[in-house]
Length: 475
Image 1: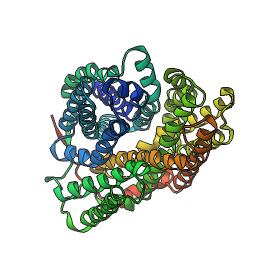
Image 2: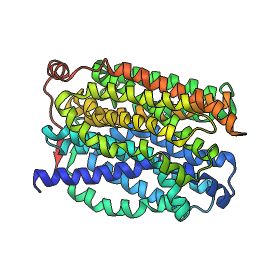
Image 3: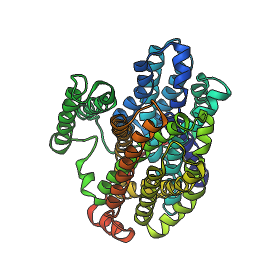
Image 4: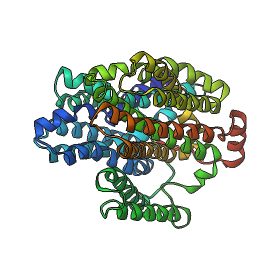
């Protein structure tokens, strides 16, 4: 297989798998009323239908990346793809809410195994001169899938049934599996053993934090089912950092990665970006339905000026990132995203005209596209080649945790100031929540300003990164 064909196949397989798995972050939200009626589920069951996927996905991303480094990236990517596909079929066939929650958890485990490895596999297959554009499109695919979740979910529910949200994944996954096994090149990291203490500390610690966050709104932030898991989770994550820094012979997350200003600042920006974007989209999609009385499909279509912008902007931004570096695009994109969210918070009212919101959607969508285009390349460009798998897993885990926190915190702000009783009370909660989201993205723009510029980053890499063995290729 020629280098060009290997690159093309790697892009097709990894981007399709990324889109399929990322879509499941929010695609189920518009189907919850139908699931409630069909499976006779209560409120707690519906919440766990969403959270079972988010929890397992966010918690196990680092573990999935570490398994790929140890046992083979293609092998673990294929295993994750198979598990995600099987979980999707189980969700579609679920006879009750308990079975659906279990199937969603299986989907999350599969997604945690495959998503960080899509970035590593694609990066290894793309020539350096085309890396920025390829990874920019990769980032846009993931962001577009997340943002379009409510639209796709609404269209499927109205056109067929909620089960088809999950059935759609099955033929895609089955079709990708043989190509993943035959067209992707196997590679491994330099580690020879799995960091089991690190896996346990990180997984249990993150589980405790995320569990507390997703339950805080419903049970109270100081309740015994929320505060103790969060405190324990923080202590375990601190123990994980200490173990990785001083105890692990072959750490799953080398702490020296954070000595790179580019890696640290980019991940802080990603955390805050997803915090603001996830939380705001979650509430604004409901605003269009609850307050302005659009159907799920109609509401999703009206967010297209925001969610469809990556299709137009990202290829151009990816090419620009190769020429001028990622920092200018990150800063401008995050600033535009913050402006768009601030605009939406300022004009929100029960009777606001849709046309008043469109410019804000376009600005926010353009900013989101400018951010997604260079972010993956900036993260991987700030670490050694043999650390890309772990860096990818860490970056994905950080941004997913940002999304979880964004939905929980903005939801808490919404609940404290408003509610669902009337359009006015909904807007009373929506406005401060979106302001918080916009402020978080504005801080992300400030963090992005501290990312090294293109030339400085290259010099830093050369100075800091001693020559190391390339990933072991297994034909």
